[in-house]
Length: 165
Image (cartoon, rainbow, N blue to C red):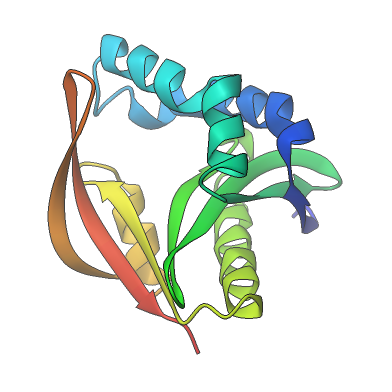
């Protein structure tokens, strides 16, 4: 089992975030979304400009996951309203999945959110994404369904939420 750690990331880490994303998106979504939609979403959400905007304008805090001191994933979170945070992104390299990395990263996100005054954490997951079961095991509960237009495509999601202690 690798040893895990996280570090807070900033705009200097955007090339690394993109590298991780390039290795995770297609395997994660190829059974759920068309190739055209995957390509569109990647360009829309993971360009250098889009990530810079997320960090500087929308105040998303990225956490980089390190497995044996090597980058292996990331998450991003932001405060939506007082004490209510949203987990926008969480991705683990396919080679690191199944090692406890996802559980570790979620716990680190929760610790970060609590350290800055957060009491609740929500996230969206595609209704056909197998990760829904993982989030439920991490004590997130479905609170509603949500359909979000991104360009010409629709994201058909569940919204899950967790009360933090």
